[in-house]
Each structure stands twice: as structure tokens, then as C-alpha cells.
Image (cartoon, rainbow, N blue to C red; front, side):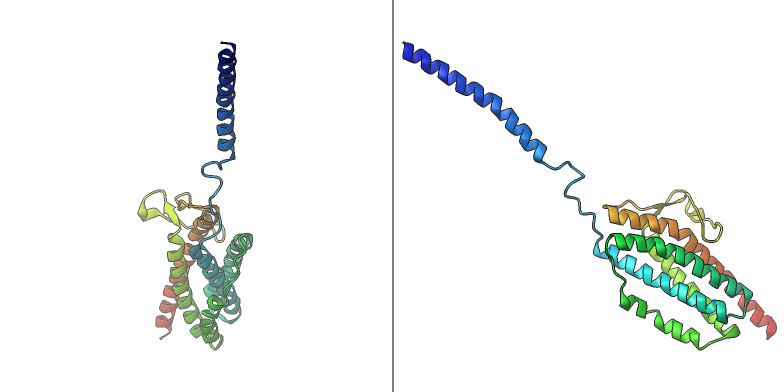
Length: 223
């Protein structure tokens, strides 16, 4: 009888220890698991994000170089003023984008830069009114492409008929333009840059079109 009593007490002790140990082990295992939404999320830029950065850096640098050329060669005061705006605004936007590129070690693509060489070589051979018309036509084409690219990364808060309003040169602000929702930190930064840059790019496009109309009317009047 004594042996049976001892065995019963021993068995009860083992069960008690096991019950007390199991919750502690479960708690330790749970604490070692990553929190949902923080760990395991890849914040590095995707291939599409990298291509976007490289394209925009190359395009912006080309606008700066062409703007400097136009400031020297253009005959029209409107074109000269526009060229100076290109240098100022694209330099500013490029510096902000370069900060993001450096953060994620995105290197410029020399092939993208080479695509603009043909336009530069063509404009380098022109002067005066002929240069003005060719330069403005190039600016319209370039900025239409830029606007299209930026619009893919933004959302609009408001009517589609008044999505983008013009602001002062280099500091266009619009609460209707907001970044598209992003899946990670890199994409979020690029979408925010696109939302900040789009009103200025649209302003450039509108200005280039207005100058083209002026140059066309001036040419017709002269003829």
C-alpha cells in the first residue's frame, strides 16, 4: 500500500511539472516568431522601380543639358525663360530622386542617357528661330512621356476635370494629387516623388504648348 501511495504522488508531481512547463514553452515559441507586417517584408525596389528611377534620372538630366543649350542658343525670350525653368526645376527634382536612388543603390543606366544624345546632337546644329521650334517640339514630346509615367504612380482626390492645377514655377502644389498605394517602402517613396513632381511636369507641358502656339503665330505673321 505504501508503494502504491508513493507511485501515485510521483505521478502527480510529474503531471504538474509537465502542465507548468508547456505554456512556458509555447510562450517562448510565440515570442520568437516575427510580428506580422514588420519582418519578412522586402523593402528593396523591384525591377520596375529601378527602371523607373533610371528612366527619370536620365530624362531629367537631359532636360537640364538641353535647357542650358537653349538658354544660349534660343532667339525667343519665352524659350529662354522656359529653358531656365527647365534647368532649375529638373535639377531640383533630380536631386530628390537621386537621394532615393542612393538609398537603394540604384545606379544610372548609360543606355538610357544615350537615348537622348540624338536630340542633343540635332539641336546643337541649329540656332535662332529654327532652334526654338525644334527645342519646344522636343520639350512637348519629352514632357508628355514624363507626365504619362508619373501618372501611373499617383491617385487623384477630386474631379478628373480639375486633377492638376498650375502653381508657381518650381513649387507646384496640389492636394488633389496623392501617391498611389505602395507595397513596400521603396515603392512608397517613389510614388510620393511622382506625386510631388507631376504638377510641375504638367505645368512644363502646358507652357511648352503655349510657347509653340506663339512661335507658330509669329512665324505666320512674319510670312
